[in-house]
Length: 190
Image 1: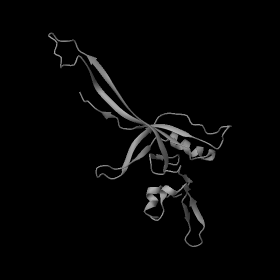
Image 2: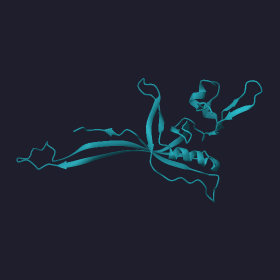
Image 3: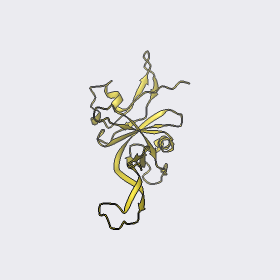
Image 4: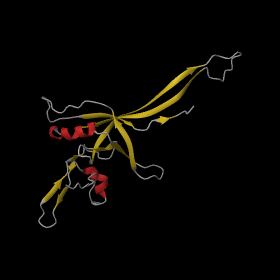
């Protein structure tokens, strides 16, 4: 069995189809056909847009159950920054020196948590979304700044539950996940 990776994200396809305005699409899919008779060989999932393709979109690439890399878009709901540290207290000197700390913090670690949301997939797609939730390997697309190329940043999904089947509103499924950057920021090294 052979596996072929066909990048089907809008950024990948934009260079192949420059006449398409990707922000005007509601949904699309990629179909691979034979050259001779036009038979369909493979079809991607339907990629849905909620009307604004490229604003506040976070694209996650994840290892699926087959070991291949898949990708899915989310909208960012919340971006939080959190810092944790250890504090220490030293005895005050006599006479008191006002510019010296009596209480201070060390071992300061900081990280960002993103709350992401997607409502583009139906009940029959929930098994595929489970593969994202279960994935041990996830990368988030990062737009290069200050002359750097676009790249990927490793992230970790916080443990969570996901609703795969419900009785009411069966065809409206919302996926909300929290992801943290894999590398914490160590602010003070002492």
